Amino acid sequence: MSRNIIAILRGINPHEAADICAVLVEEGITRIEVPLNSPDPLNSIAQMADCTDENVIIGAGTVLSVEDVANVKTAGGEMIVSPNADIDVIAASKAAGMLSYPGVMTPTECFAALKAGADGLKIFPSFLIGVEGLKAINAVLPKGTQTYAVGGVGPHNFADWISAGAAGFGIGTGIYKPGYTVAEVRQHAREIVKAYDRVTGQ
Image 1 (cartoon, rainbow, N blue to C red):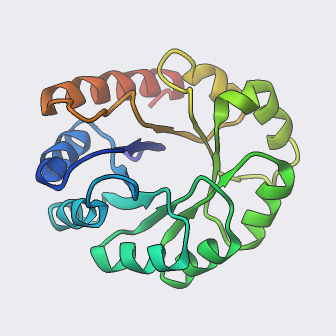
Image 2 (tube, rainbow, N blue to C red):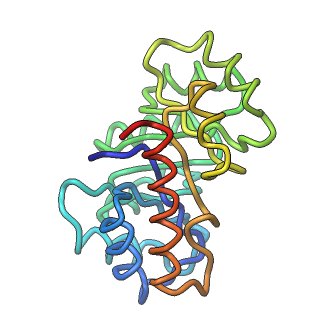
């Protein structure tokens, strides 16, 4: 079962990457992002990519340049997530055969990102746009556009965001913070998956 949940592991270290990745996958989260402002992020991405199969998508977040895209590809990443909608980064991601999820906040950014080839849109920060804001934006986006709410989302408000048209979620500190044990990550992931499945009927 594929869930539209991206685990954002900001601050993760390479020595824990494989174990954290394993428990996320075991609990049903198969899209995992390592922000590039984490310690030695490319090493963490490589560790995860080496121990997962084709059903798991490992990628990078906070990707700000075309050079970053190339480095993530070399490390084994398959997904590029950004806080902004940089057309060059989107184009480079698609040229490399990678998934592209740029950060957007306005309809102008949404349409520009889709025109450049984005696979989905990271609505960021979601708490600023709000449920009503996303509902308004979704009303004008092409049918089937994948919008991911990121920032201020979690089990307590999954239903609200889905009712506004969100296709999925990016979850950061709700799943992982530096210092969390593997057991803590497992528990958080389990609660998030349970809430997501309940709301989506999976």
